Length: 157
Image (cartoon, rainbow, N blue to C red; front, side, top):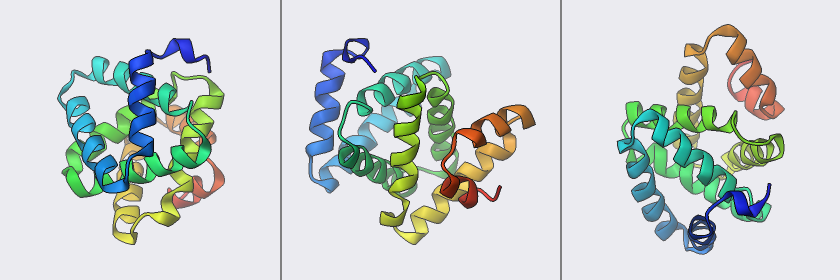
């Protein structure tokens, strides 16, 4: 992914976020996710797509740390409906990025689950199952084919 596709300010913000201590990272993510939640669907999808592209420029360990904080934040700071809306938009945004970017995001997201509390891991899994259950069969199959094997196992396919 070419860095010039993502605004420099966003790249800088994502780098700072990735390097912050976890409690600060969760607080900052909560603020950003609340901004996303307040956006119209199209605007939220565009903003998340840019964020996903920016995160993809980070080293793998930083992507995993951000994914862990994002899941913890979604599960601890947001009601189920808002969590589902944000996670669904994230999944749909992944379909609009290059395959390497999508793969890096999914690997970080599902690769961090062993570091997430059991309660949050279960909440995240249930949220993802609900999202997948609402997709038309063809789209669900396409999405599932993009997931790593451990993610497909978690979602019961």
